[in-house]
Image (cartoon, rainbow, N blue to C red; front, side):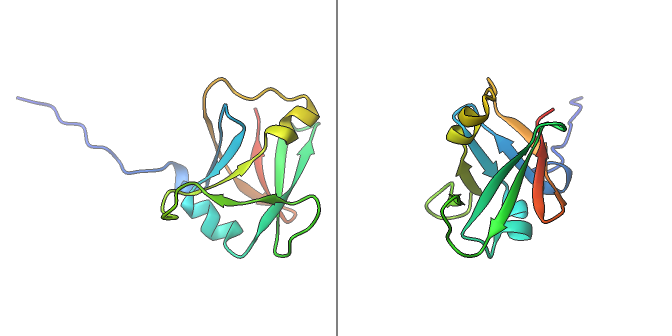
Length: 116
């Protein structure tokens, strides 16, 4: 007799994930986009060197240092992404060899992901 194991559903821990890809993109889950970025046109990026984490500050008006939030798919059903290759290069941070999903959280007006 077969022993079936059921798939528990898509996404992880509440779905508030941001994934760092080897190509230098932050891929934002739909749940995280809806919670933090829905009314934003982009983000300002910051780095906390001591705690090795990235902060994304949503902005509602375009500004000089803003990184745009773009749909991952044309039908806007596959999440959103932010190109961060230049940000990582500027800081001297290596991009991962494979995609790394991180649970995002909010702190002091920033959406934060830990790099460790």
